[in-house]
Length: 307
Image 1 (cartoon, one colour):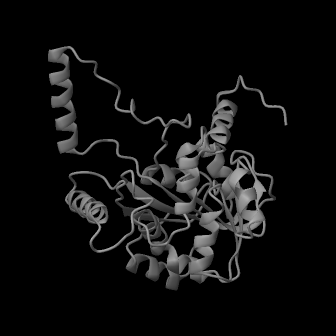
Image 2 (tube, rainbow, N blue to C red; image 1 turned 180 degrees about the vertical axis):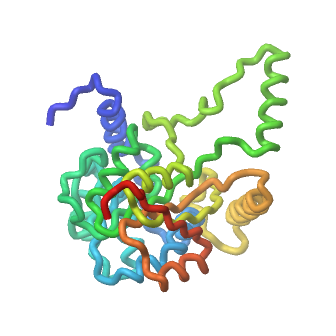
């Protein structure tokens, strides 16, 4: 396929494909670590799937698509461990690791897909699942509308939570820091100066209001939101999650302290699980989600549209 590299979004996807198609001894060791279920890193990610357990189990034998699942299709594998009856197709813009997974018998099939222009029919899947890939997309809203289009029941996102606007204390400290920098002649950077990754993208965080407006604009009935904190430090990929691990204790301590600050409004949660329902969830599922910590929001319908 010929790509117009003059287009910024195509350039971004080219950079991503090259970035995740790299090979080195260090990377290969990291790739192997993703399959180890006793590491601190596995514990971190497993925390993000657990709140969705009742959602996965409430739709037996349903058909799912995972988007941005290029790490050997591990999202599809982890979901299927929670609910084995699900029919899940992993997809990513890069075939590199997905093809290796298929040849090794880890997954049975996959599709190479650009999230901005999915090749599937309307409502071909029951749900689309996208974990920590949405924030890499150059035009994420286009990708989200595509995920909604190909899904009959809904879309699940697990992503960084938008931290702006800053809380009162955070804003005060930012202004003090900027004032001191100005006095000593250091540059004052835009608040998003550090939100770019070496894979070539801006880290596009998700917010409650953003999800609400997208759903309202296309007349969807319900959204559900779950907030959490996470902490990453180099080495968690290879560290065993044991009671005597110093790194594991540090990760849990950092998360616990962040939870306390978030609870009292001193900072926002770093992560968010957002479910956009195309069909109103059952009362039973809604009650289960609320019990698990989800905020379930039923949206008003547009009175000016025909019933």
